[in-house]
Amino acid sequence: MRLARRAVLALLWLAVGGCGPYSFNPSGRSALKSIAVPLFENQTREYGIRELLTEGVINGFIRDGTLAVVNEKRAEAVLRGSVLSYVRQPYTYEADESVQEYRVIITIQARLEDPVRRQVVWEEAQLVQWGNFKANGESEDDGKIRAVEKLAEDIVNRTVRSW
Image 1 (cartoon, rainbow, N blue to C red):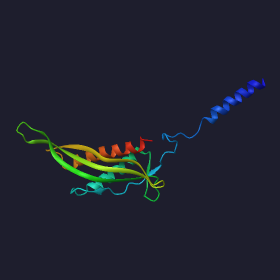
Image 2: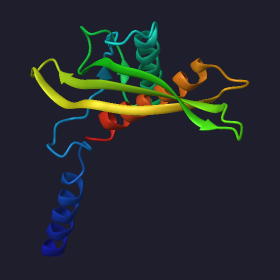
Image 3: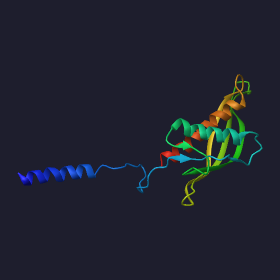
Image 4: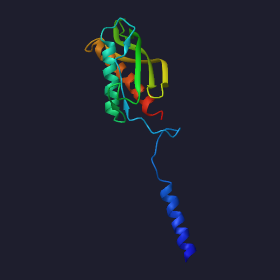
């Protein structure tokens, strides 16, 4: 009887002892809870692109909900980036060779830093995304917004899914 009781207690201890905080981080470090996104730099001539991209990335993190977006002093991670290029080019044509659709292509550099450990968590030298817009009925801003949304999704996924 004592042996059976000890076996049950040992099994309970193992079951409870196996429970603990869970983390997606393979190194066992607890997952980040906050991020700061300072204004992106702009190395292009496209006015307003850095503000649009920064706002798009912040909104992407807010929509995802995994990380709280806070100021740099309170953040456990800081995302820094720069817009490297901005191109608008014809994409599709009508039979009469007039442009039917344009494509906006945005290339950025992004880096996630751990300010406490003073190390780079991840870095991409070139992230490229695009957004199309119709020549009739849409504006270049529509294509720009589509490209920014894709870049924001890539950055959020790279940041929160790589744990």
